[in-house]
Length: 502
Ligand code: GLN
Image (cartoon, rainbow, N blue to C red; front, top):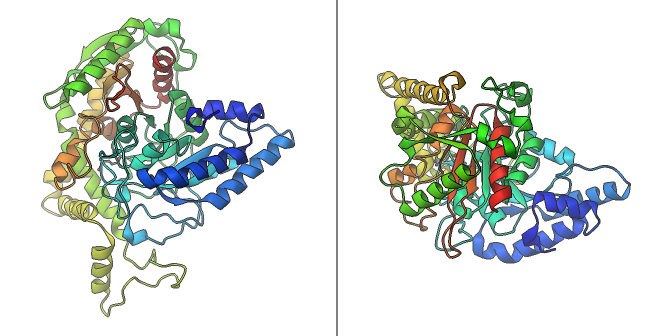
């Protein structure tokens, strides 16, 4: 078995059938990463010693005849804004360059208890702000399909790691596309759960009313396995919920419950194609690929209907008002004192630079510690929240957010003949070149145009590689958006596509 062929499912199968040990596979991945990551740059840090220990523990449990979970021994990469106790957690920012986490994020705690193996921490845009991973303070990550191109962002390291066989699966975070878009650019699957389905405890906050941790995997089936392992209500995150409770039976025409949905029920499901997503500026290749996917679903007997989400055109603008506001509040804590630059050598509480005046100290630490994009958003956020501008920008954007949610509610409204799922492109273009947009923030923001509405509405959304692409072409993803808390429906339909067309 080649590392390349391993999915979570195949790995678990092989492990159970004693085709290999968890230790052997972890060792093989670590060796491969040593070589491969020189050209990709997916990882910021490897955790070889602890990974081998974790793998060994799983082998011992198997030898003792214990039953193990589907993710036991699984070599996993973790975005470097998710806390793993005692490990460096930088969010790709200089201001956290030598910060070591003092606790595990809830998702890590859960995966650790299930026996997952953490190979290392992956690169991202600083504090998850960006769409190309070029905003990392530390390094560039390259798209495994074309080294001249970006892997997408902000979870570019996590997507590139999976796409280049440097992990079987990974965790990313998605505030507005950061799991979905890099997955699309790298030809893998990325799933953003419903807001609240996964605990945010221990995820370094970017924009708290949007942030969600999600899996990046080779298959939809794997995304579901990883999602099942990390989801659930967490007392440490009051916005988290037990989503199974919400999977109430479907009201319409006795149509199938998500949980029991079968291929032969496909014709019961309606997929909406929002016209606002097929606009000028959409790359022809993306348009063709997504249109062919729509045809595929049609031949699977899904009902395809054209729908309208009229406020879509304001999604990106309101996202880039609301999130900077949240960012400016969340990032106020980084004063250079609380998260000391060199924790090992300095005592906790020792600032980066000493200065007589407190204000000077903050200015110095924050000017030197944050990169350009982060500063841009803090300034923008402070501006839209300031008195006199609050109503004109922040409040208005929040109203638009409600309208966007209402668009979806209407589209999904069963009595009004609404749809069950919505299918769109993930990004307006395939992976762009390194350096192409980095000097033009607005051009970079436009990469989020098709992911922002689902994020504003907190809906589950998955990015799946489209088929029908000639071998030498860059990957293109399509997005399936579902009703709130109907994550399993999105995954199920994704799995169906995958089972038929992969
Ligand atoms: N491109 C988005 C942004 O820069 C990505 C945010 C995210 O999902 N972390 O805000």
